[in-house]
Length: 369
Image 1 (cartoon, rainbow, N blue to C red):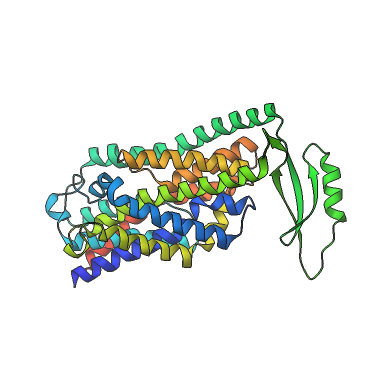
Image 2 (image 1 turned 135 degrees about the horizontal axis):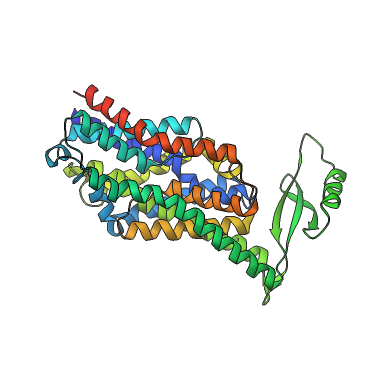
């Protein structure tokens, strides 16, 4: 019975992780108008699954870290009931946040559930290991992401202006571009052009920024869109690489999930969660943190992918959520288009994730037979 509950808990957590996290790598594609929600979601699903499979050989240290060994007593780590309580507590916290469209850290919820279930089981908690191996990296990663993105974007924007690469605002009805205006135009002229456009059958006029011109014979707009897709795939791959082993650690005790079977099963459950439960979080990430164009999204993705992949390779448990959202916060700060009320709500959700995971983990331990 306990084995069944453990497998169910791990799959539930993986599904919740996919629903809350899968869209984070491609949110800039959707938010900048580069592609549709469905296309972005498909791209995220494929590349995240590839990252999950790569975790079999590239992120074994994270699997060891999130087994709980060194954080709680060794005897408790070998108890399937404890691992089931961790999975249920963490999964419950992530599903609750997903229901309200709030992007939170599965890593934080896992750490909270490990601590809460450990306390409920009467185990001593290694507070030094908790701080050095988990809490400090999780606290510093969003701050580092914000600072790195801010500096990188300002540098790239300066270089773009120096090369004479401009962007234009295009007005669209449905999926068709009907007019364009260079950004150097007066804003009143742009607004007048938008008001002069008409649409029928309830459609609305929308606009998005895109890059125009050529550099050394290469069309800038198409190149940036292609790199944007590639960078989103890298971020999603990095997320699968970083998150899969954390969840797979729950199944280490089961012989049927030894070797590469555990990451494969977790990867498939993550993919399912993204396909069927990502919409609310996707809207928040894409449209309610900051307005952005393709170049800004590309910058955020490059920084996110670099930080998360680097952390995975050295076994540092950074949160993809904190890094990717931190990159968006940095873009919003640089462009002065950040939506601070939503950012405040997200940060509050981050603060409460660890104690919520601990509470649910303790409750799950108390309820399991």
